[in-house]
Image 1 (tube, rainbow, N blue to C red):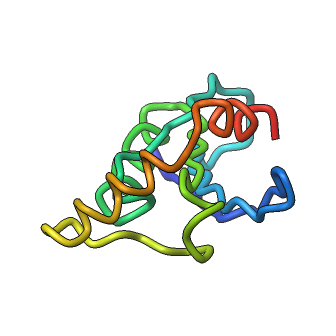
Image 2: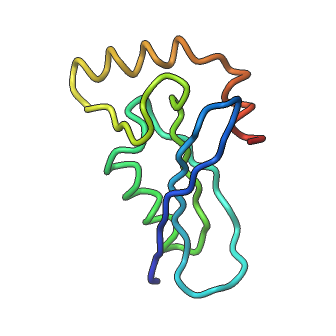
Length: 104
């Protein structure tokens, strides 16, 4: 199945949150998945997985989970330094903030 993708911006708690959206190419109604990334945000592995799920017939929305802490569009490198950076951002992000993102 052909897949289309786009980035959209949503404002949540005065912070711009980028959301990667992948969906099947033919117009229609499809089930949706809210796809949270790992601590590295929206790097290529996450967008590839979102595209793959869209290829199976889902609309997939993957938000940047650390938009309050990192500049928009930041993908954290999956190396030792990135692991420290991502884990620090995870500790500094409250569960209520993830909930607010969901409702954003």
